[in-house]
Each structure stands twice: as C-alpha cells, then as structure tokens.
Image 1: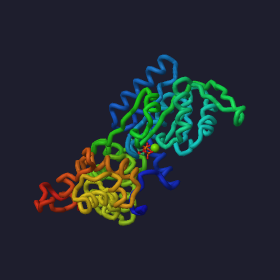
Image 2: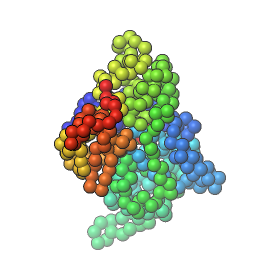
Image 3: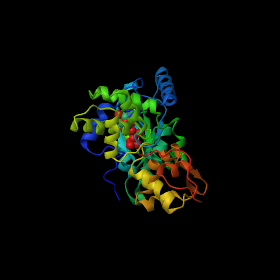
Image 4: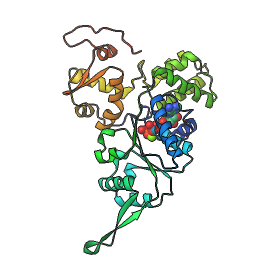
Length: 344
Ligand SMILES: Nc1ncnc2c1ncn2[C@@H]1O[C@H](COP(=O)(O)OP(=O)(O)OP(=O)(O)O)[C@@H](O)[C@H]1O
Ligand SMILES: [Mg+2]
C-alpha cells in the first residue's frame, strides 16, 4: 500500500531530481555536518593523492537522504576523477558487472547505489575485482567453456547502502573505509536549510528555519522538501515564510511536531494499539501497516529509535513512555504518561 501523501524518501519525478541536484553541495567544505566522516574521507583522499594511487574502496552506509550519493559525487569532485554511476538492481548478472568493470578507465570511481541489492554472482565477481583488479570471464559454453582472466584498470568502488547489515562479510571486508552516516542535529539542518533558501532565493526567517529543522526527521533531503512545501504555502497564501506559515504548511502535509509523518505514526500506533506496546518483530509491524518490511526497517525504525519513541530489544520493538505521550495514549495499566503531548 503506497501512501500518496507521504513525502517520498527518494527522488521520484524529474522535478525532484533536478531540485536535489541543484541543492547538492559540490565539495567537502560545503557538505554540512557529519564532521567525523568528513575528516575520515579527507584523510583517505589526501593519503591516496600523496602516494599517487587510487583511494581505498569506500562504503557509505545510512538511512535514505543523509547524503550518500552527495558524498560519492563529492569524492569525484575532490579527486578530479570521472565517476560511473550504477546500482545493485542494475547488476543482476555477473555479465552486467563485467561489462562495466572492463570499460573503466584508470582511476575511475565506480558508484554502486543500493549495493546490497546486487545479484550473488555479480557480488562474487566484485570481491575479486576489488581485491586484485582482475576478473575471470567465461568464454564459450558447456564442456568447452574456459575462464579467461582479465586485468582491470585500478579503480575505486564507492558503495552506498541503507542496509549495511545485509552485505555479505566478504564484500564488506573489501571496503577499506566504511562511513556510517548519522541523522543530523537540528542546528546542522538549519545550516542545510539556510543554504538551500539562499540558493532558491527564498526569504525565510530564522524561527521558521528552526521550526522546519526540528520537523525534518534529522534528514537533509526531507528538510529541503519541507522548505519547498513552505515556500508553496507562503506563495499561495501571500504570506511571509515565517514560523506560522511553517506550522500551517506542515499541518497540511501531516508532518507533526516531532517530524513524524503518516507512516511513522501508523507504525507507532500499530505498535501501541495492536501489539500492546510490544515487543513485536519489525516484520509483523510492517504487515500491520501494509508497508514493506525493508521500508519500516531502514526508514521508519531508525528514526523512531533515534527520537526515543521506540527501543530495540532482543525480543522485538518496544514503545517507550514517550511514544504513549506523543500519541496521547494511556500507558498499559491506565497510568497517564509523563511528558508533554507534542503533536499539534
Ligand atoms: N550534508 C549535507 N549538506 C547539505 N545538503 C545535503 C547534505 N546531505 C544531503 N543533502 C541534501 O539532501 C539531498 C539528498 O541527499 P542524497 O541524495 O545524497 O542522499 P542519499 O543518502 O544518497 O539517499 P538515498 O539512500 O535515498 O539514495 C541532496 O540532494 C542534498 O541536497
Ligand atoms: Mg542516494
């Protein structure tokens, strides 16, 4: 079941892609937040440049919209190397990967988005290629088939995944560096938004930026999208893009005070109302809201855990007191939860 009112996590229309492209920071200095990852990447790239070699393979892991694709493009910019873009779902046969690998120029970067969704046979070819810059190509068919080794130009794989846990160990081990992207702090999102507003030539006051930031699920992509919705609202209602406009606009789009959208709230409601607060497995939760387990696991759950509304236990997911308070529900046993009710 697709909820059409949900603000999409991934760019869907041409306009969205163009919008994201226009706001993407082009170099490490413009990339907001993720200080640790920035520092680690800087070191890695500088050391490689000093030794005139290709940088180690890089794995970018983290929930959607935190900047994985952006960072891959920044690595290309910073190293001055060409970058080839592909994705796990596009590599369903070893032959697909062989075609890409054999056409790389020396030093080229190979960005594999959703790398956890590659076919097993392609994955195996990739390990060898990453380690030895060599693949074996099968020539001929049946009993007469022979494998012919093919030397590859040195290259750097940049893998991106929302589900690092799904990568087989041998593949994960081939990456010299794994960047774990974290959700952004509100102050960082305010900087992302201020930059976007400047690029979009939009006047938004600081209070409005702060309000959008707290409702952006710690995610720059969502911050930028909400900014666009606020801009629309201000345009149509002929008002300033101020704090009040933000509150009204986000009410229209079902984004609550903590930044939870309809799917987040549906999952939380199911956990509390149907599973008595848990513990419950993430798959059962996904089924009960009619969503794919992968979406609940990689998109919804990390955010609910980060906000302190859900905890992970060995027996499953459990709603916290704060979750009961947020949805205005009585705790099991009838106690009234502590804390303010935060939704508007
Ligand atoms: N650190 C950042 N500073 C400024 N803007 C950012 C940052 N990270 C992401 N963005 C903005 O958010 C948008 C989405 O980022 P990006 O496409 O890199 O996410 P992603 O991690 O690749 O997501 P997905 O998993 O869906 O592919 C970018 O277009 C960019 O405008
Ligand atoms: Mg991406």
